[in-house]
Length: 268
Image (cartoon, rainbow, N blue to C red; front, side, top):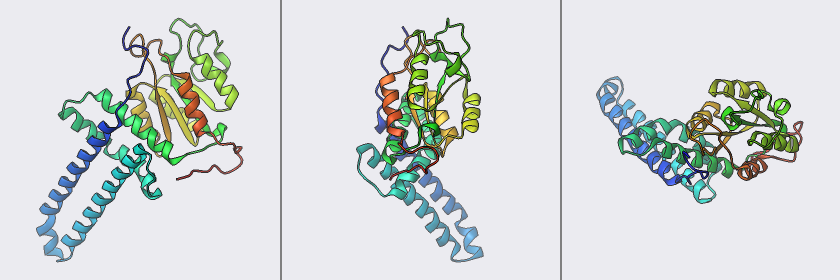
């Protein structure tokens, strides 16, 4: 069996460390830009180098406070709401640099992606986002379906799944009927994005591998998206599973009691 029935516990501090290092890289690049442009700006006006320097320093400081907000979210420490909202944007902005630095230092990309997903989820949890059930979209890849199943469940699992118990799709269909959220099985990122566009949810819960979750979370930004990693006992993309207890817990955390006609509330 490929990867066992247990998903490795991600280390949030790995992505936070790479984010911090990314901030230093961005700060160095900003300083280099300021140094290169200094003489040219001074010829135009003696104040322009100062204005640019203050602007770059403000961006660096604000980004640094955003990283402090991420650390606070991980530790469960309340932080200013303005930074709680900006940290979600920050991790998506600096993610490519973090991946590049991780490669330079020899970190496995999959571990970085797991850490990214864990940090992103923690920030969403910290914001206490609540939506009505009919404004929540749950999507999962087709590999969660038993490979030998003859029924085509892509796009409409609610009608086509026979709930034989051979895979976790039936459990998700039953959960969707019980709780009222939208549930779709997709064949890839393009169909997933199309589904989000058609449903127009207020929040998303996605079940997938590290790579697809990472790209999906960034694709739907600024829509809040919680990622649940699948379990791959036979390797990737074949007869995968998911921890249904964890899925239920994440969905319950995101659902409000307000009907869709009422305004959803987001605390924090």
